[in-house]
Structures are given as structure tokens and as C-alpha cells.
Amino acid sequence: GGLDIPTSSNLVLSEIYYNPPGQDESTEYIELLNVGGTSLDLGGTQFTDGIDFTFSAGTILVPGERILIVANQASFEAAFGDGSTIAGEFENGTALSNDGELITIQSGAGGTVRSFAYSDDAPWAEGADGDGFSLVLLNPNSLPDHSLAVSWRLSSHLGGSPGSSDECPDFVGDPNSDLDQDGIPALIEYLLGGSDGDTSNAATAFQIGSVPLGGESHPTFGTTYKVGADQLEFSAYI
Image (cartoon, one colour):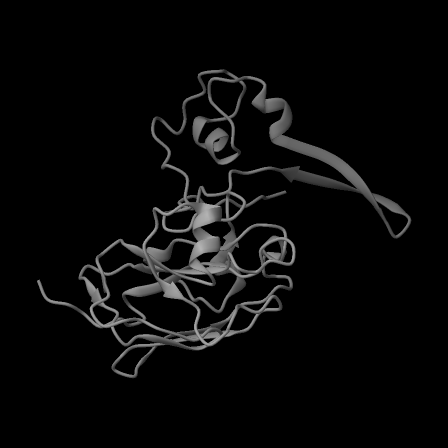
């Protein structure tokens, strides 16, 4: 088949590692993902805000493939290995801002592919700001709005997952089963990071407490969930 040029309907910025722990920023990276059905010709595509980088002629990204632009390839491979596809290094001494900034990607034809600003302040996930996590785009195949904090989450592992998906494997089985008979359906146990074969999960799945506010004690309800179970959404109702 032929090649497409990158547009907002086929190319996403899927991961940003903008502030590694400590003073060494050389392991920073940006990951792009082809979410379209046709291979993309990235030649001439460039970052015009945030970092400087232009893809070399002949750079092809097949459907479902990820490609990285890194601050320093030697430092990146020392930290993450050499199994990822790397297009090159940030150019002209540029780096990702630790405070958040505008990132713009333009195609070789001159059209804007992506232009959005990330932030290190809430409601953006603050764990990406020097605590060792990356920002991961949620459900990239749905073409989420990159400018919204709710479109991003922290990576499930320190350092992120450059070159591969950060999502957990999909749930498999009967969502309503309760093999351990702890009263929590299998799908909910999956979401909470537990197992339908372990009764001890029920004791730690939910936390009930209280906080003082205005001279009164108010009840609180908390739970943990599996980071990376992006195919599921949950809400609490009281």
C-alpha cells in the first residue's frame, strides 16, 4: 500500500518523560505512535515548539508502531536498553521543560499534527515531575485531546515504557465470577489490582476512615486501582 502523511487523525504523542529524577536530564524522551491503518512517511515532520527535531527522509512508521526521540541516545540506552526504535536526539541543545510547555509537531507538508501544552501542576499528574514516572496518553487509539490533563496518566513503572504499550493485558474470563467468594466480582478485583483466587484482597480493597473539617468529623472512602487498566472506567457513588 501507499504512504500517508502524519495528521491529527493518525499520529499521537503517546508518552512524555520530561523530568527524570535528580539533576541528569539526559534520559528524557518523547514517544510517537501511529494509530492509523496506513504506514506514515515521517520524513520532514518536525517539532517546532518544545524541542527541536526533524525526522530524516525515509523515516516510515507502520500502523501500531512507536518511535522515540530522545535527549541522549547513549544515556537512554544505558537506562532502558537498545530495543526501541529511536529516530534521533533532541536538536540544537533543546530539552523538555520541567515546568511544562507547548509542544507542536508539524508535518513535512506544513500542517499542524499536534499542538498542546502539558503541565507539572494539578490537575496534571505531578508524579511525572521528578518522581520517576512518565506521562502516558490514555486510550491513544481514540485520539484523545492531548491538551486535557484527563487524557493522561502516570506510567505504571518508573521510567515509563518507552517503545511499548504501558497498558495492562485485557481482562479475560467471566467478569461476574467470584471464585474466592469474597463478595467482589472478578472484573472489580482485576481493576483493583487483586485476584479472584485470593480472599485476602477483600480486606485491603477499600478503606473507610474520617477527616476533621470545620470542627466535625467527616467520613472518607478510598480504594486502590491497577494503573494501566485503561480499558476500564469506574466511578464511586455514595
